[in-house]
Length: 89
Image 1: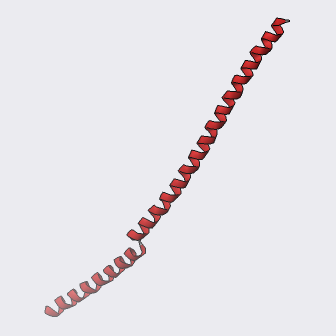
Image 2 (image 1 turned 180 degrees about the vertical axis):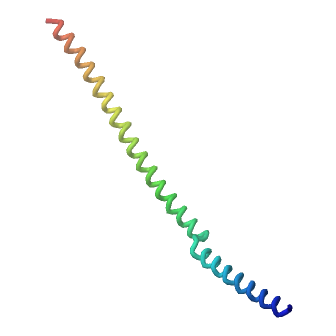
């Protein structure tokens, strides 16, 4: 009886050791905290660059809209002046 129990315990110990080794291998292949922090820092810099690019594009669009509005008001003013000049003859 004791021999069977000893063999059973030995077998269980061997299986548990194999499983722990497999788990260790899986955990080693996963990203650790340093990898995660490095990726977060890289993403943070990338998003800052994208946001800066967005702000530059937005500022240019606003500048173009303002220039277009100025030109439109000048054209309207000139149209009024032309009507006045033609009406004066």
